[in-house]
Length: 193
Image (cartoon, rainbow, N blue to C red; front, top):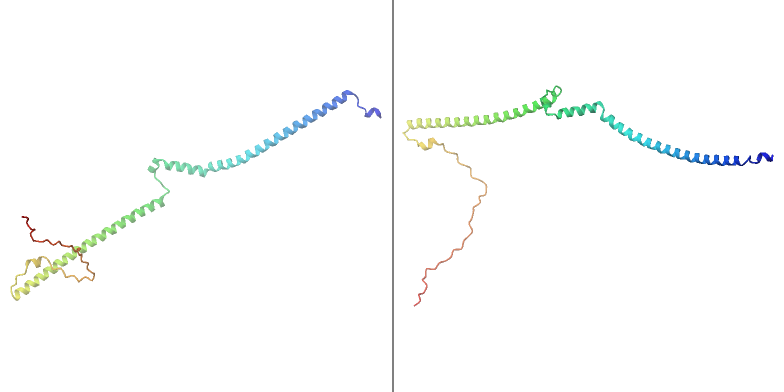
């Protein structure tokens, strides 16, 4: 049994030592490869997270509704868009037309009020002229029956204005500050001889 426990020779010792050395180097390389794989896995996970965010942004930006909205805004920004007839904005056009019509109606109401005021003024002037003629006719008829009195042309031409009621306001009287007057003597200065 002594032969079995003994090493077989120097060659086997060298082989065992070499295999242990190779195993250590292989374990070191394996650790480096595993560390490198873990680093790559972390990097891939970070890139996937960033990609998910970018993917959501791209999907949102390239969704059909967003694309159509962007195209619609670009087309409406074009000056030629105003020349294209619109078929779907009937409500907005109606609102604009109603606003324009209401503004016109307001203007017409103001003009009618002005015309009514002018007509009332003309009517009042005609009524005053008729009353004046009637008063003249009565004065002439009463003058012809009693005595012939020549009416003043000035009174007939301009009717008297009614007297005004006395004012209840305090009247302020502007006063001038008192000025001292200098007395001037009329005596002659003594003459020198």
